[in-house]
Image (cartoon, rainbow, N blue to C red):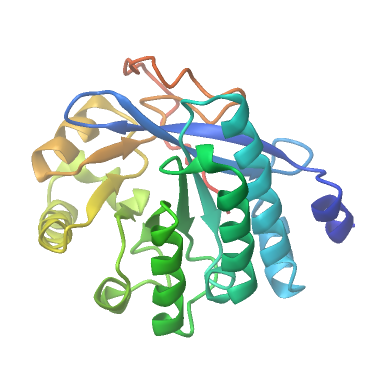
Length: 251
């Protein structure tokens, strides 16, 4: 059933905005996959990994997202890629083929390497990340601090963005240890020439704290829920009250 869902495209995509904190302008959307009802896709993602279907799913989502960008020339999308998929030469080859046939994707297709599965071969993963970057695709390490990723990831992977796990970000308004930890992490990323994304920005207080710490981008209910169609890329996002405690995630 899962294999048929992947091969026949029985899934849908929703898009959540990522905002530049300094200006409040929309930077890009993260692409999130959904199966059937509104429930979490986590069980299906885990099953895809266990049954070795995750690479096929990742590629199917990339192709669907690419079609959306072709229809909307100003749309910039970040697609999630499993830690298993990023070590696959076949996946990189397919992306090279896709970008060469669709030149309009250059500079607009991004990837977020997720922590749903640990990366066993970091040097190989970095070679593939650099191959994707050479095609004009920026790469983000997703959910840093949530699980498998450690400082070794930052040491061995050359990245464009690091997204900090929302469990740390949402506590910023209270100060304390999270604030100290994130301040040093953001500073280290800046010295590595890596931009930072604060996840689960749900209140204006958290947004203000993230801005003070030097985060480059924010994502969360303060700016909008994941939805289809995505918000107009030319429109400036106005922070509004959103449901607190809800985290939009790929897995």
